[in-house]
Length: 441
Image 1 (cartoon, rainbow, N blue to C red):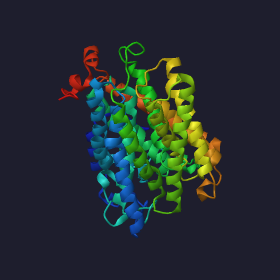
Image 2: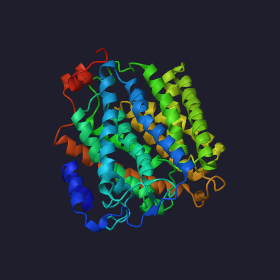
Image 3: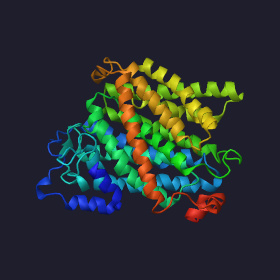
Image 4: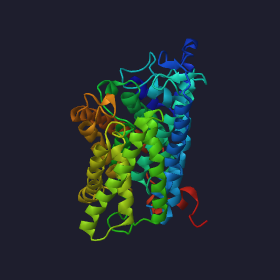
C-alpha cells in the first residue's frame, strides 16, 4: 500500500502534517458523504458519554494496575508508564490522522483497506455533525468513544513485551502501530472496509482489538526473545492486589466497551451488558476448574485471568448472541485461554510475559468463531447469514495484517531507537534503568 509505506518511512508527526497540508481547500467537509446532520438523541448520547468514560477507565487505571501487579516489583512503574504513554500518544494521533484513517471514506481511501485523510486533524468535524453510523450522536462523541478503543489496544500488547522493551521503543511502536495496523483493521471491519462488507460480525472489537493485539503481542515476544532468566528465575507477580483491583475496573469498564457499542441505551445494550457479565463469570469458573485439577490449588490469579478471558471472548458476540450463547462462549473460553496461557507457552517456550497472546489472542479467536455459531436474529437482525466460515475469513484477514504490520513496525523500531534495554538495565529493573524511579520512592 503506497499510503502505508509513506507513513512507515517518515516521522509520525511529519506524516500527519504532510497529509494535512496536501489536502485541497475543498476537502473541508469531513468524511465526504459519510456524515449526517446531527439529529440529537440525548438519551443515546448520555449513554455513550458514560460508556466513553468507562472504556477510558479500562486503560487508566484498569489495565495499568492489572499489568502492574503481575510484573516483578522492579518493573511496576515501567508497565504503568506504558499504559499512560499509550493513552497520551494515541489520543493525539487519533486526532491528527487515526480517526480519518479508520473511518474516512474520501477519494484517497484504498480499496476498503484503509480510510482517507480528509478528516485529518478532525477537519470538518463540528458540534453539529454526526457520523452516519450513529446519526443521533454528536460526531465528536463518536470520535471520543472510538478513541478509547484505539487507546487500549496497543496498551494490551505491552503485556507481551513487559520487563524488557525500551520505553523509547514502546513509544515509537505504539505510534507506528496505531497508524499502520490498528487504524486500517478498524476501517476494514467497522469503517466500511472489505471485512465488514463480507458480513464479518464484530460487535465491540473481537478482531479489531483483541485478536489484533494478541497477534501483535505474539510477534513482539518472538522478535524480542525471552526475558533474561525466563524459565529459571522466579518471575512471580509482585502484587496480586493491584491485579485484582485492575480486574474489577476492567470488568466494570467492559460494560461500556460492549453495551456502549449498541450505540443507545436500549434492549440491545441490555443484552450485551448481561452477556458480558455472564461470560466473564463462566470463563472464570472454567479456568479455575482446569487449574484446580492440574495444580491441586485454586489461585486468585486464575480467577482473575478467567474473568478477562471471558470478557475478551464475549466482546465480538455481545450484541449478537442470547444469554445461552454467552454462557457457552464463556465456558469454552476459560479452558481455551488457560491452555494458551499455560500449556502452549510452556510447551513452545516463548515469553509472552503477561499472556497478551494467550488471553487476548486466543480468547478473541474463540469468541469471534463462536459468534458465527451462536449469533441469533432474535437478538440482532444483523446476525442473519452469520457463519463460522465468514468469521474465519475475517480472522484470517485481521491476523495477516496484524502479523505483517507488527513485524514491519518492530523492524523500524529496531533499526532506529533499538528494541531492548541492556542486560544490566533489565536485571536492575526498568523502573530505575528507564525512568529513574522506584515503587518505594
